[in-house]
Image (cartoon, rainbow over all chains, first blue to last red; front, side):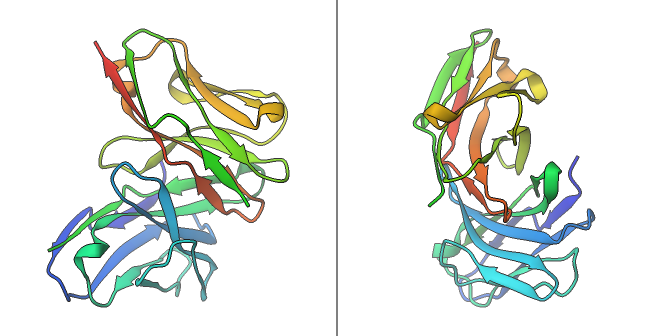
Length: 113
Length: 112
């Protein structure tokens, strides 16, 4: 079982609120990712990090921001939530080399009302 | 550019029947290929992966997949489907830089 955790699992919040989605992994992986997934849709990469103090934007433009101050922690922040941000957010980390594999958290289902 | 195509958005099979989920990829070099399964409200779980070597790979839960370079395909199969296999299945390709590209997924319904 993967040791990558996301909190909260579900969040309903009002428009304009600031929110932070937490993601932590205890596997010591350098590379971490945030994906956005709408129901029945593919996963879209919105942010990734190759290590501490490294953050990059993904293929899908997002109004969210991320930080990577510690290896194990990769939080995603929305400064002002809007209904268009309603989605599922999945965090992942990868083990490199011959054992390359992406490990996923259980996701955060965000609803902005 | 890398891409993954899963032509079947939704598949329905009877319990006990065989299953094949299709996946085609576009990638310039030898790909790293994956199949993940996602149950409702959950994250993705790895079923199997292919890096090199034997083109038929075995995974968890009785799944297998075959890599066919000539067809740029990596189809997932299971000889006998169980009701608990109902889920969303994602094919993915990864680059050496660890960028994962996912298909749009195939939703599997299993009827008794």
